[in-house]
Length: 434
Image 1 (cartoon, rainbow, N blue to C red):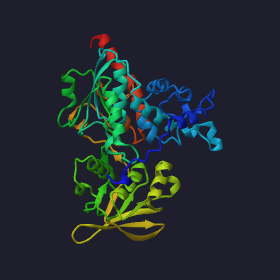
Image 2: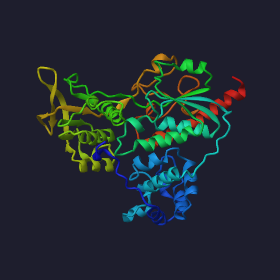
Image 3: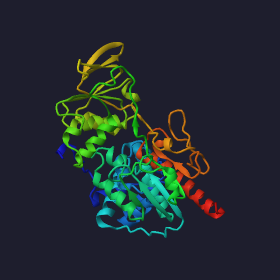
Image 4: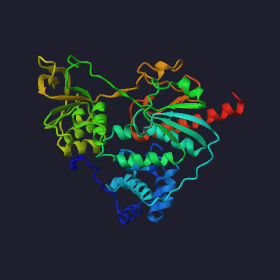
């Protein structure tokens, strides 16, 4: 791996972490907790850290999150917990994410935490997908005494955390460490299984599962429906990021990554995936990388820190530029993108165009199972009671497969609510003997 592709570790030392924690005012009405989607007990874990009690701090975090080392690195803290810190008014907000990361990393290195694993007697639950939602459901249910089996299509668990978020933002070893911790709760992982092809939901129920959770995310990228989309060189950003991840892990050769050294690359879109794709293109040796966006900077959906990272890496931006047509040569190869920029049409040369305008759920599972309904956009329809259950009894869903693609912690927030729905449903079924 080249140096530019590695994660830049800016972790605190022990002394730095404690000094930072000691700045916390321990507010009576902590706005930082309000700003956290999963309502982490932020003042409490910071107070424990300020006293040097790392074990207590990790225990407090574990009450709400199974992925502290991940959240500490990739959550948009500047708009969530840290963004709500009262000290932020003076430009001195507590660096909550870095403190969470420090505690999780220190705990893993020193092996402080050993979970009390309850007997797995409450029921059997299958989880499809091992991204943030799936891992949250698996970990929380295991803590509650459920026997959980996770089915993952890839060769190892982690989902978007492993195959979507680049190494320079989230080290793969951190993801593997978090999934290993969840496995130590008694959760089983079955990889290389494509649910809908290799096994159906009906077959899962036949194997004795009391409930099934679908957390497959948004596996299909949205196409930009303009002329020339079939040209060689028009690529989905999700596919590109996955190929890079497989290449970095040694599972694919360099020629399988669809951006070559020296390429001129355009990215269509301005969300976090677009920022990841642009920065990853730089790391794969692209000569020039430009983000093409239909509106202005003020309307981008990417986190500020991700945009700034892209700028620092040398990514350029074309604002108010609406794609009109992919331009190709006589051999069907992409040579440029025609855009309308502020009323003027121009052709921007390109060897590759990476499309990052959103994603939608795949239909593989619902097409092999009767009774699961989706809305007009293809997202699974779920109920409020029991929370998260689809239109098929015993089948639940959460995360991006239900809602529009969001952040890691928002997927976790919804998953935690679905956990309560699954537990209530399984308990009721067993109580009534159904």
